[in-house]
Every structure is written in C-alpha cells, then in structure tokens.
Image (cartoon, rainbow, N blue to C red):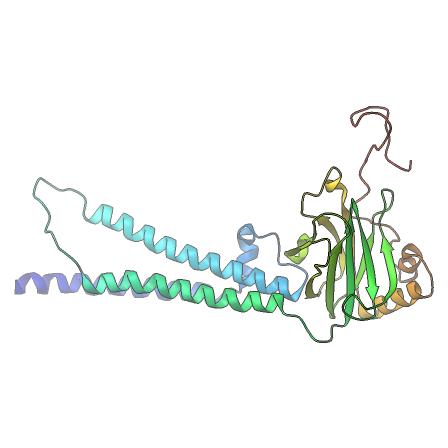
Length: 308
C-alpha cells in the first residue's frame, strides 16, 4: 500500500503542476488582451457589434466575458472527458478498482458551478441595473410616438406627459423620419403608441423596448458616444406594413445638435435644419419601401411606390 502511494504521488504532483501551468498560461493570454480585442478577434461571439452607447458597451463586455468564461469551463470539461476516455480505456478483462465516492472531488464539482453562477448573476445584475437606470435630470427628452406604420419624434422641454413639445418630426410613406441626437449627453426616451404594440429598436444600441398604447409610457435612457447614421426599426409585428417602419438615427456633436434644435424651434423643417448643420437632409442608410397601396391587389405589377 505504501509503495503504491509513493508511486502515485509523483503522478498526482505532475497533474497538479500541469493544471497550474495551464491556468497560468490561460491567465497570461487573457490579461494580454482586452475584452474588445477578444470580441474583435472572434467576430464578437455572435453579438452584433460593440454598440454606440455607454450602456451598449457594458452589455457587450458582459457578453464577451461570459462567453469566454463558458469556453474556459467547456474546454476544461472536454479535456477531463477525453483524458478519462484515454487514461481509463479498457485494457483487459480485469474489472477496475471500484470507489464509492471522492469527497474533495464532489465538493469541487458542487461548489465550482455555484460560484460561477453567482459571479455571472452578480455582474448581470449590475449591468442590468445600469442599463435601466434613470437620471433625475436628463439632458434631452424625446417622446417616441409609434403608429401604423411610422414614427413621430417629439423633442420635449421636460419629462412626463405634462411636458411641452418644442419640435417634432413625423415620418410618411415618402420620407423616412430622422431622429437627430447629441453624443455625450443623457437622452431620455418616453415611448407611447397610438394604436397597437410597436417596438423601438436601433440595432447599434444593442437595446430595444416595446411601445405600448394607452396610459403606459415605457422609459429608458442612453448616452451615445459615436457620431454617425444608423437605421432604426420596429421590432414588434404590428400589422401589414410592419416591415416598412424604418427611421434613421443621426448622432451629432452637442454643438451641432443645439444648432439643429434652435433651427427647428425657429420653424425650419427637419431637412432645412439638417442642411444647416452640414448633414444630408434625407435618410442615407435606408429608403421608403414600395408600399404599393393602390386600388388593385398587393401583387399587381403595374403599381408603384406611394408618392411617385
């Protein structure tokens, strides 16, 4: 018995050293690359992109970190499975030594999953709280009004239903509505619908929220940090022309936004105000769909896009 124990001891030490070396190598690799580097290297692990808001960055980092943790656990489990398959493969007709339990091992594979779930839950709760957090005094308030089958964006002078609209943009079958917003400021969205349930979604925000009719006003806030143009959509099946409910988000600097909003307050149209700040007056990332709303059938070949 003593000889057997002394013979297996070096083997156990070797296994422990191998595990330690593997863990150290993994930590070295992980520490040498940021979350963004890992995401870029592996196509964001299925996540659309890094996003254009501070909240999107938090969700992106949580996704990448969780995926890396899952892969580490997966490779560890797969490694142990294949090691057992090779190490304890059948070598004859003699029955291997039967053991009832291994208390340290059972404690390990009971406690470890609990710790992993607890850590993931902790960071998920933190990110969710930050994403849903509402400030007392947002820099900008935009009322999003959805209707069949387009959007209206109202720039408000305060929060809640009692606030006044200082400028408004309404979409039509011929013109894509453009929502102009500043970067670096807290933007509060207050959503309501005139008819059925819609959903306000800009994919690059990595976030969407349903727009309900009646007295329900869904509210959320974002802080954008990247200038550009992005297509927004309705993400809730709302009727025949649901797929046509596109809009375009234009993010600009705070100075340009102030100039745009001042022009709108002075009575200028969305297109004139956009031209004033050097932006294309019409949507560039999407265009009105051919709705073919004619007196004939939907598939009638002679129909043309509305307004043409």
